[in-house]
Image 1 (cartoon, rainbow, N blue to C red):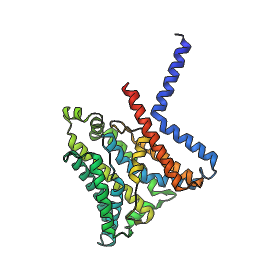
Image 2 (image 1 turned 120 degrees about the horizontal axis):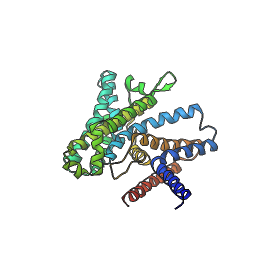
Image 3 (image 1 turned 180 degrees about the vertical axis):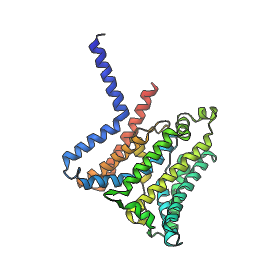
Image 4 (image 1 turned 60 degrees about the vertical axis):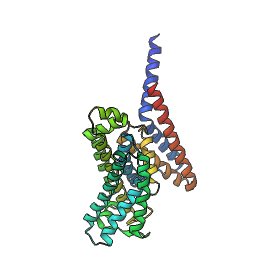
Length: 323
């Protein structure tokens, strides 16, 4: 084999390795380039800020989903939990008359409790996470409607602040950055984060190695509920009210963002940086289609195809890895 052939094979391998690890980032770059060519409004400062604000809710919601998927589970309830958390915060402020800061904390606590219930049902109740969180999806959405009587509720100032600006920078973008730092630290620098990878890779092997698998699962779902609550409060701050139907379908966006970002639905693989890129891909697609005056019906079709493509890539990646 000649030196030239070896170099060509090595270069081909490097390209394949790079695309496998950074396919979502390359896709995002190509997507942005295409939209820049298609519409001059895409790269304006106002539109980029709008993208940042929109991606904040999806990405924060998806951070919690990243923990769950890395640990080998799924959480279908995060959208409903987000809405319930915001509604509880608004109810305690507007109806019970509690201070805004305490109402915000109770909203976050609601998400944490809902997540812990999911975790206990999955770990100790032996329910598949799909079924446990599907039940919570219905329960949380129903409670949201009960608390609100089907009507919007005013948010406390502490929540409304989350939808405002600090100088020229929108608060949701600041919260996104801080949440990404915290989520990345949990996943990469803590014992519970490393345990998520172990449980998602092989739960039985993790148990035999001495890891408290059930407690880890409960913690993972608790974190997912907490991040869902934060996302719900961000959305309520943007809307300046808690809406009973808020975040409907956002669980699908969260799952899609995580998978597009390179996580495996089989568990054991995932990164917070990849989740941010996946969320950006979804939001940029929707934003670009809006700028191009594509109807929301076709937008749903496009997003569905992107999700199917991402899952297909994940399946091929796993087959390649196992062969």
